[in-house]
Image (cartoon, rainbow, N blue to C red):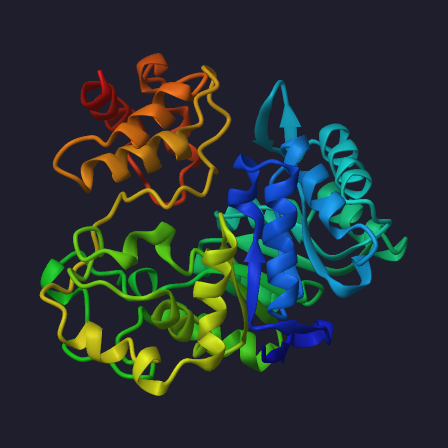
Length: 381
């Protein structure tokens, strides 16, 4: 495993990390197995943005006795209310949620205290200019967080964060599809004719962001490096060509200021598929040739990456999971029995959707959730 310095934090992080999101659906033993495998492979950084109590406790149990070997990204503003994840800036909810994170993770500090999920410039100004930021400063002054970070999908917000001064690192979504999604509306202008290791085909605002982060020594950890697995299948890839985990990782790791890609793992095999990057050949890492030969150069907007920011749902639907099962089902000619069984096991599903569309306002990728819920209901019956 190779390690990189995470910007001005000075922390040495493994270039392959653990995004804890999918650990929510696993029991204590399975979570420990994944984390044990990560540690064996040299991974030393994990992100826990999730507020669900069990997953926090399971991660904490897995880390017990070896806390000092791990760098933890913990989120401030991710809360658990009435059995659901809720992003909030209300300090009466934020403070106990962060204390809960410390307790369940069995630690008295978080290495990277992340200002959770800011995707609008107006929200960034409000968060960093008010009592929420004062609380973050108090946490750092009191040693409960060691460094201040922020998570965002919006390059405009990320740029503001990189120039803010106090924010030392950014959790940002990076993959070829997101990077090459331009500001223009003409579909024929979406992507460059050729792709190489440079930044020639990348949307200018994202290219500028990476350069600013490098100039300001603001490190980047990467989320959505696989685009929710969509890039692994030519049928779902916006390029019409499949990439491998190694190629996706190489793409993200060749962006300026990037220190680590935090991938989600369900099993030890998923960990090995990612850490194979460390011994991959140049040919195995070559994403450029795949993209250059791709049959189409257009990004399909409105595609779910299962990030979970659509929550909370008033009907307590796990929207990300419903969307994932729908996508899995439609990748085959017939709905498989396994996918159908997983769908039927959900305590609430697409049939419970009331079409309020509150989720759509929170989605950073503009997914037409209500429409997808209707299609899912029709598909599964």
